[in-house]
Image (cartoon, rainbow, N blue to C red):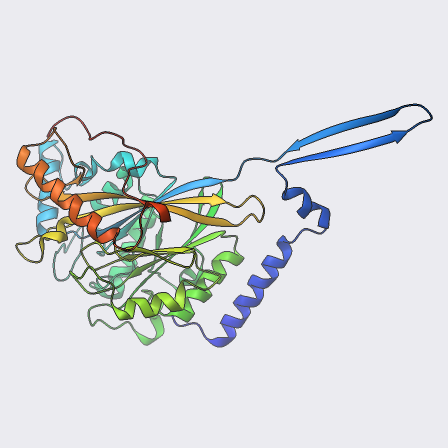
Length: 417
């Protein structure tokens, strides 16, 4: 998202105001009728000896609800890509197969009405010149695996977005478009950059925006600043206004921010949050990049997930910190206010995860008491779950609407490796 000038910003806000005005009922009685779950109309006809009463009952439809699932970094390090090649070989196929890595989390992602991944790496359009850290370029199969896992779209703005320069951005988006995977955060033109990304989520229109703090020192051409969206509060709010003018009832902003391996949000994160989330145009902030989980919090009545941790990577205590194998699925609940029609996020459920690097990089559900895995692995998952819970729930708890319960699983998964 290139920096939006004052003229465009004013025009956007004017359009947004016109849009809101068009939603106001022409007849005040419409608003009154919508405030009552059950309206009773009594018609009385007086006569000389009797009174006749007719009662009509109107029942409004129930409030709309939806769930949205978000996960952290998909980082295709060399070890992850080699494991995908092994999975493909074991299935008697060529290339790479990332699908088995998502087997345990697939039921959670599939049950959500909207599931959004964070794609940290460019995608090679023709599966050539593949590379891992520090300059990424992943095979198309990574996106295919994400789609098979149940993702409906991805945020793509990250510090690695420009690893393969402008041609890498274009190739990534060409490949994702061909595969039918929606994206936000990168663009091939100014028009595409400003076009709202909208999802129909169980009858609720959700807008999605993605932006990053930077690109590891890479610099976009002056005339192509639209290629990767950078975190700029004014531009983000203007883009959110465009989304709402186009029909979005709820806008999610994915931010790639924070310090690596640090659980506590930085002052820079807090400053950007204070600029972005209180605006009327933005309803939820979802963060990633730190490679460890960060707290979930609220700004007044709106939610921020500061950091989702790593969802798939080769990081561990060997290179980084043990917590870099931890991640989570944040499941956000949406509910329509029957009186105003406003869509609010009413709660966040988080499902802790852990990357099993020694068994094909399977993303494990970090639930205690698992008996389907070796005792050592089960104990590691219990430790991971405790680490994640300590950080994620350090500010809020069940009384605030934040729970560690899975919406979709009541028992540990069964089966084996």
